[in-house]
Image 1 (cartoon, rainbow, N blue to C red):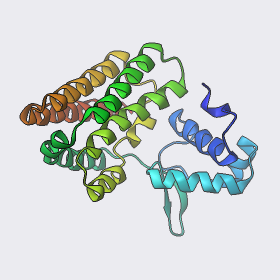
Image 2: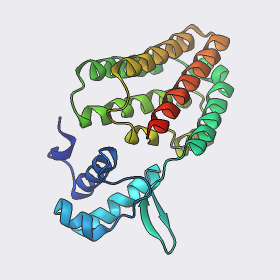
Image 3: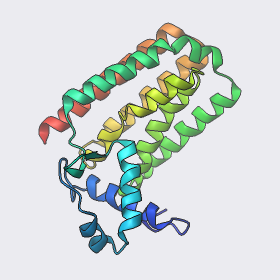
Length: 223
C-alpha cells in the first residue's frame, strides 16, 4: 500500500507523510528551518493543512517549534537519545511484574499479531513505506507492553519520550540482519512475558535496549 496515495487520506495526512518522507530521505535535514510556503510549492498543498501536519509532527517530536526561530526539523543528538532510552528502560523494567500480572489471552493475541506482521514486513520490505511500517510495528510492540502495566500516567509518559524518532534518520543505514535481530529480541520479551518469568523479562528488556543504543550510536557516529 502506498501511504502517500492512500485514497482515504486527507490533505493533512498527505502533508504529514510528505514531510516525514522528506526528513527520512534527507531532503529536510536535522536543524533545518521549515518554511511552509516552500512546502506548499513542493507538495502542491495549501499552507493550512501543512501547518496542521507540522503540529502533528511537533507532537511526535520529529519537528520542533521555537519562539522567534520558527519551526525546524528536530536536531537529533546522541546524548538526548541515550537519556531517553535509559528512562524507557527504567519504566519497562519497573513495571515488568505488573505487566505479567495483567497479561491475558487478548493481550497475547495482540502481541502475536504484531510479531507476525513485523516478520512479514521485514521479509518483504522494498521501499520507504515498508520502513515506516517496520518502525510503527516496533513502536506498537513496546506500547502493547507498557499498556499491560495498567498505569495510565506511566503510559502517557512513556509515549511522550519519543524514543522511536531516531528511526526516521536511519533509513537505508541499518542492515536487514540488524532489523531481524531486533525482532528476535521482541520475541524473547514476549516469551518471557507469556511465561510469567519476571527476571528473564527484565533481562530481555535490558538486552534489547542496550543493543538498540549501541546500534543507534554507531549509525549516528557514521553521520
